Image 1 (tube, rainbow, N blue to C red):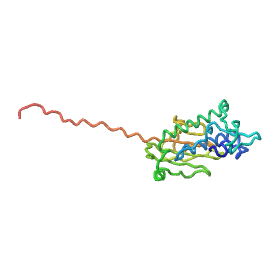
Image 2: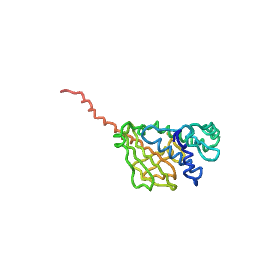
Image 3: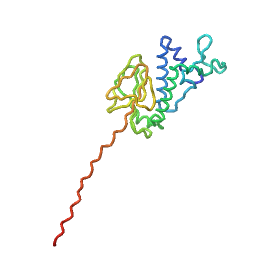
Image 4: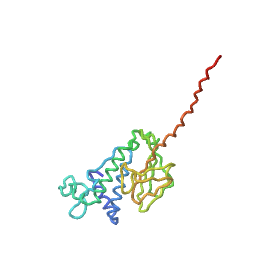
Length: 220
């Protein structure tokens, strides 16, 4: 979203009239997770992280507010008295922290993107899942990024190894949220991002002491 057009949350409200507020917040967070784990420079409209809205007196929403009063254009700071809004702010903060921690999300060339990003297979309809292999832009870890826009949970088969979850439908950041191996269940209308650290090097065996004993003293 940007200053031209509807805010993200207003667009979601108008396009999903039968959805609950909870589901619209999940849609908002999923949208943020998509662009915050994409290549390129993220673009965030001021206030999106607190579900910014531009309401009109007729209960509609302003899509072109360059000449609108503060009642439309202002950030509604009092919304942060609602825990649901504070949770969205925390989610955005976590997305930013995770992106900063992983250079694989900031590759510099199209060739590098083509080399290191592989789509996972056997996915449910509408589900998108990508494997970002280690070595991308200096990243030591493998990443798996999953987007489930459906109203039902989905199960995704993971590449080999043990994976640590850092982003799910409720939380995002650099603190582990759990682990998964072989498959992982992804909640409805949510993103999931997992990281696999490089395997630890095998311990080296101590060298055997092969020092020859001194010859006993004697006549030669």
